[in-house]
Length: 505
Ligand code: GDP
Image (cartoon, rainbow, N blue to C red; front, side, top):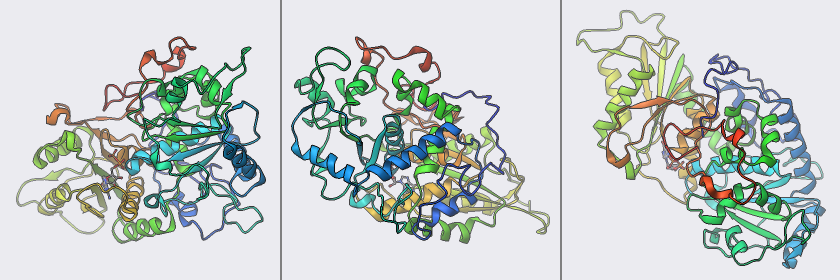
């Protein structure tokens, strides 16, 4: 994870004024964008309530360097053409230095999973001086704007982060744990020989597929070892597929340790800052966000986000989940209390402020129950701060079930992630990457419902997250790098077990 922060971090404030300016303290480049191509890029800073961490000067420098590299090496440039030529030639080669090296990211699994893996992979590209390109499946298009300056700015070079359709490695969807080109199989089949820095020269193929998804196994995990990073450094093209936030295990790689510390002096700020830097909803999604926000939420003094995810493997009856939500809310003081005396009314209408409760869930049940609660009973006071006595309950959609491969479904999910991220306080479902992304973008440590493992309602309804960083659900086993330079122990001291999953970091 998740929780590798100092709980009493003096820089973390719940000051709702935040520190956000138009460009998030220089996180976003000032120029190089076509003004109408991406409205959210310009407008998002006005909607977040919390901006607890300013980017470090070192991070800003790394991002500006990255942007320069992207312009120099992105598709359409001579350096990209040169690299593609090398890739087409296909032969294994003694590792010669290429000016531009690439990381092509392949989406996998639900939207939250994809967003977390995208952020982790972009960070890995920065750490390894690679150019970050995205393979856009149809259901993953028209979700996000081009993030790097120079895209569609009408100048001679037009950058993009999209992997072009004529990319010579076809059918990227076919890559998986059994692919011959995976790092594990290339090692097993002795397609990578030699040793970096030793007498036998290193010979590597022109590309390596990194399978870092939840079903990665054995030597796939050697990605997290320092010596293996020295090998991967020599590979011109890396293809990476993951559905996980693997950042916590990058901290265990000595090669990256100093860079990470300099970029992110506050360890819980990684997904928060990179998410705000890289992810800007497309105009289609932003239109949905704005229409909903201005129609239902913007007039409220306070907005509380409630994100409920019922996993099929941890399902419980709706009543049990509703009780868990209410127990959690009382424990962590999230939702306004109600006066359950039959005759109670709000004394006067004048001068009352309102609280909006934004519910997101695939089902409508929790929204219905909450709406009824605040319809039938008067709220006494908002406990989450701000004091609201008129309580509105809203839910933008209830899609009933998760759909794979449908763009419109993903667009709604993304709009809801962004609406949640505008909350003053959050109550989310543990283990849900949808919830993790919302919290990180919001800059909030949510009250997180614990999961009903084995379909048993947990004894403790929820915990307050110690960090806004997402949890890495499948970190490599401790013995992964034995024989190689071991994982750096002093660094792993910063990494904690996740509150919502004992095996996660
Ligand atoms: P996770 O499964 O909770 O970790 O989150 P993911 O985002 O990876 O996958 C769940 C998918 O189900 C989402 O991408 C959506 O497509 C859908 N989904 C889950 N919860 C919601 C919700 O509250 N609103 C909407 N619109 N879709 C949801």
